[in-house]
Image 1 (cartoon, rainbow over the protein chains, first blue to last red):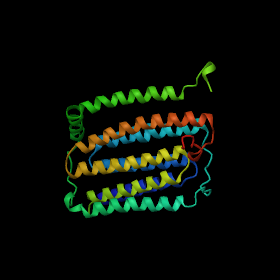
Image 2 (cartoon, rainbow over the protein chains, first blue to last red):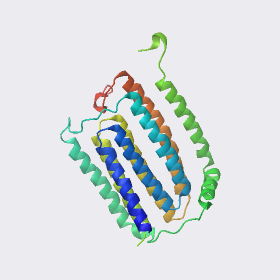
Image 3 (tube, rainbow over the protein chains, first blue to last red):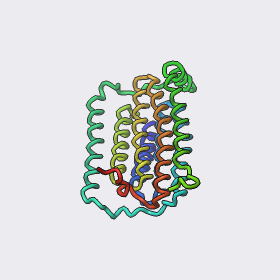
Image 4 (cartoon, rainbow over the protein chains, first blue to last red):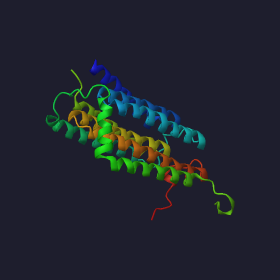
Length: 173
Length: 101
């Protein structure tokens, strides 16, 4: 059963990722991204990270992808990009080589070091113990970083408003 | 036969590789942003896998912070992309070479 869930969710993740980089149309790429993010959320659930799975669906698949789609529609860039035009002939093979090399190196390192990881996934804390533990970690050990994230979000919001504001009067270029 | 931590790490490596390839072959700035999200999610997946393997909740805390930073990054990045594309519609990454020395 766990094997079936793992295989299905992995197929979702990889198919969505391939879709992101292979679709001409940015809207289709965004939908591929949704598929990938849901697959990751399924993996989170099967690894007993229930809170992160919920946040993954709400924040990533909900907010961030909607933001992407909103920008695509707002700018009207949903015209298909012609992927057959390639200004630099060498770039695409080089990119594939680099990607395969990075994946291969990481996989080799993981396979070499798998004895330190233990063979079996331990079953984590059942039920809402996951949320309780996460909250304890967030609000005791990492409370300073947690407060800093609020500053970061405020800065991001203010910065975006300033960036995208249309300038009135003579200052507009 | 149940999936072990190694499987999740291999999947994360594959997802990261796909993200790297996409970042290098695509020219639409929005799609490049989506590829960055793919790579962030690959790292999140391996963080949660390690947290599960060592029964240490700190890995999940790190994922929480990564998600916050990713949200802020997307907001600012899309703001910049809107500011650029509003002035010059249909531009690709190759056209943005004003800072080239």
